[in-house]
Length: 442
Image (cartoon, rainbow, N blue to C red; front, side, top):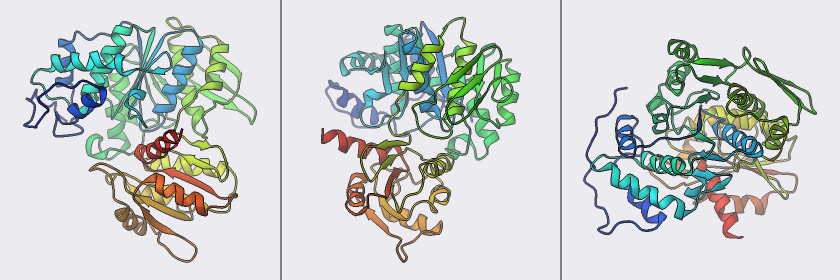
């Protein structure tokens, strides 16, 4: 994929007065570029250079198909308990944009963010930036001025041409790799692995927590002489029902409680976190107590999040087949339920049939929802995609459509029994609407 040239802003109609509030700025930058995604670093790097953007701290970059959010959350929790000042950048957000930029465990305020939106707008000149590129640069500038001890940066899409990759990380983690975003990254794990491997840097720790890493990732790390740490070779974990242990190249952490995040795959993410901390131990020493406290207190909304009450409601942002397979396994781990109700909304460019294939034996009633945005599949489209996957209304099985996830959840709650369960999944937007409705109720 070639780098796009520097380009002038497209012909769009923008407000005559400059933005004032954060909401104004977000609406403004949504209209600056005709595409939601345009991969490439040339434009981003040009603006970053004009901003003289440098992060004066240890930087950890996290890429991968799934598991990035959990990995970032565990890193943040452990490093905060170790006494470090921590900046964390993640995307997308669930309810409020400010969730993307966290300083010392709290979302950045509008007042903290606004000067950096203004600085990026002034620096970009005629260079067109996407929403993601613009906001990434603004948040990186916020972090540069805040001067934390460590910055954790989640890659948005891929790695090689993602805006986050304009920063040279001191340590890079690649979590699991699977098929997603094929229009941008390729249609095989080898192609996708090669794209994600480009967050690695020569001579610096490169952690891969995928148990079966693509050959392309391993070969790229060797080509650039990165310090590659592979799961199963350089680090591993073992455990029983009560506790688990991490073993690395020269460090062992034993008798650890399981992370507070639910899900059978969290030990893979946790072991990758500990491998990164081992690789950085001379720069960021972390005590065993900080590791224990971090794992015990880590929180991440929307990742197999079980809401209190009966019937239980599970929120999961699973939005590709790999994540749907993990969701299916995690539902099995909850034990039996009488009936499972699925509130499902998804993007049209996802492999919806494969996602449904992993869950159709676990979900009896399907409540399909419309989501905002041009990329979203309509509820009626989802009916057709489910039928193609072998799921349709018949006998006791329901397939219904709703205008929003919160409407579908309300309907499921009215009809579900105490021994049933409800699963809300398929997209960040599906979960976000439910979380927003809960916060609106106070």
